[in-house]
Image 1: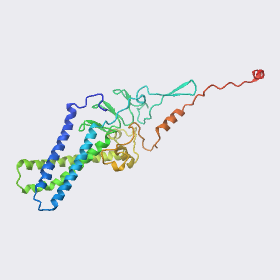
Image 2 (image 1 turned 45 degrees about the vertical axis):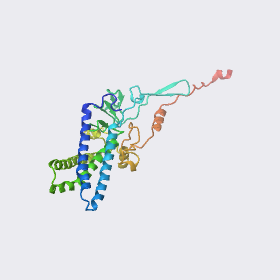
Image 3 (image 1 turned 90 degrees about the horizontal axis):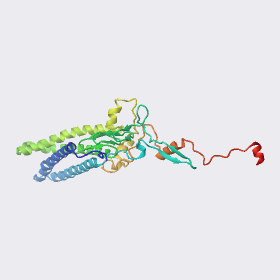
Image 4 (image 1 turned 60 degrees about the vertical axis):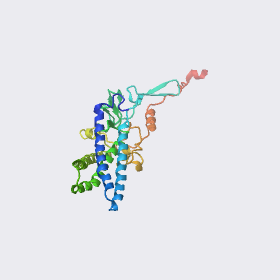
Length: 326
């Protein structure tokens, strides 16, 4: 887990999550109590009201349910960490035995495109592991996170390779919820101006709608930014780093469709559902313009780059007087 070396549920980590849950609860209770139930109590002289109320109930509660599933999965899913294998430690080596007694040891490091200025692989001194491409160390989680986008205090977790889809959908459905609430509840708030309501009810309606407008505006801007990042195969960290140092930047853009599949998963019909995460191990990524090569082909290429030793040394050629004696 990303929090394997530190305590996750501290007060400072829990507080932002509780704040988010509080905002969700306020908007949801205001919408249900002062809009859905209010329409249900209105005189049903208008035959369209029951149908409208049913549609709004189904849509709003369906969006809220999917949003909460995305929230839970974004919080609880491990974003991905560097495996505890020899490939990512200082003593990374593969051994291949020859046909005879001789043993040939070939040091094979996983192919990395992001290296130091001297050409060495990036190494994390805190985790004592090499960093794969697009991997960064999070000081809050105290762990190296695969394809790290950023650490999000609102979910008390890093956004990485394995939970990036759930975070992306969480922002999307939060924005949709706020948008639907504002559009459907605005009429109720305007109609309440000419009605006699106690001050608490009137304040609650206006406060809930205003909160939905503010959150919808913030989430809409945030979601638009992440849509652009996804279309360019960038993470938030890469956007900040590569725009400041373009000379050594490595880009992983594989086209719009492949970039979307890298975040939302291989099945297009499941892109908007919190299931079917992207395939892969989060350790290797293809740079822009590079074709797909299987890991086995790459290993065969590396192994074949060193000549094999014969099973036994060839017998020396016999010539001259020694040949005549034979």
